[in-house]
Image 1: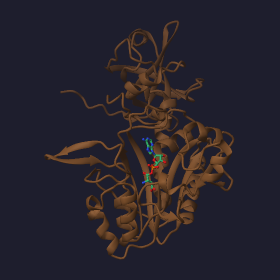
Image 2: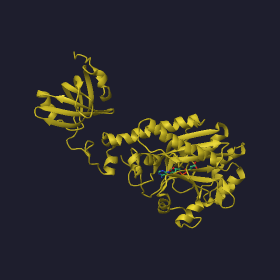
Image 3: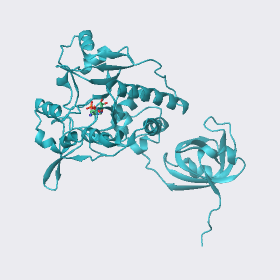
Length: 414
Ligand code: AMO
């Protein structure tokens, strides 16, 4: 019978506390370095790297291991002069548990970065590169921080359906699905549900994936993206703008205290009206602000708001402000739109009027409209593009760099 191995299994971050002990270590071969009769393996695990020193037959065996192979080492932990870890392993036994192919689609140990789509198409291997892994560890940290902030502010996390019967953001851009012979769609946003839920829950938030069938291939659009949405009863536009600004600042300060190096936005986010932006970049009132116009306007700015958009440019549920304008806002970072929101219509008749003005049939919204006859409160909210926020936090220029498996109109795999 095989004898059970009784050695303690330790990870790269636990070497110091186990100095002088014989232990078992797992990991992937990041690099192989030969020096005379000694082989040095640089081994990685999800928590860092360590150096393993092999002599004699073991040195010979280790010298041919393809990089990225998964190995199990047993040996003694001693102090090291290596830069990657102050401790190293003097190896007594080596199992090559899972040998990697000699030629891999990308080399995570290389200083030269692969093409973006090579990285995306081979994501698990790409993540063995510490720099890439850090982006996604940060993503997880940011999600936790957002939840912490919103829960502290009294928001309740909800989860609403992603297969829906009616469009929430207008008719275009919808992915159609066959729902047992009847047409249905993938949700573009949680808009209608989050508004309905404030009727009784007051403050709600949802963090989820949404789907938009836009064909355009840009560095800031995906067909499946993640959004952080809030909606609150008894709040006006300026109240939810304040929450958004506080949230952004809280994310920066929390990340800093977790050791990320970031420059905090220690300023009050400036507010510009849509009209001011139009005048500044020569866009005619009523036209949408193009990427070029926004890049021009935002080039020397950080975070800022654009408020009072024309009603005609905002979805049907947006509260009008006078004849032509709306109680709406976008949060921008330089030329990039990060979030949009505002006050919503809470009156049944006005909502029906606005649906018609947008060429939408109130009949197909009847399940939603009925809620507005049950004492719908004044309410406001926003949707924050989480992937775009990650672009800003990591300083990456392409949304595909901060999404594990991005979906655009050209790529469905992997
Ligand atoms: P909007 O359509 O502006 O508003 O979307 C909100 C935010 O989501 C992000 N976003 C996207 N990110 C990546 N790829 C896309 N295709 C994409 N589309 C949108 C953007 C955008 O600012 N219901 C409203 C929000 C609200 O008023 O509460 C809505 O969906 O960062």
